[in-house]
Image (cartoon, rainbow, N blue to C red; front, side, top):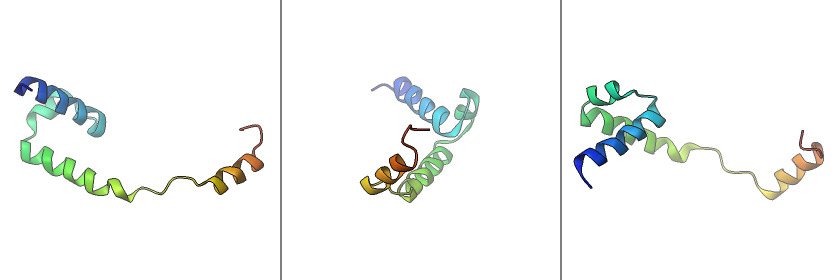
Length: 67
């Protein structure tokens, strides 16, 4: 993969995850971007667990029309 292609992909990630525009991406140092992305990755496991079958059944019973 060329530098240009890798930079384009990384800029897309920064745009989606961080809301950065191209100028903000290019103004950041590689160390700054790495620190931010590492922080996001560390927090990725902190999400709540998914819904289990019993919870889904309870919600279907509570709202049978899906509303």
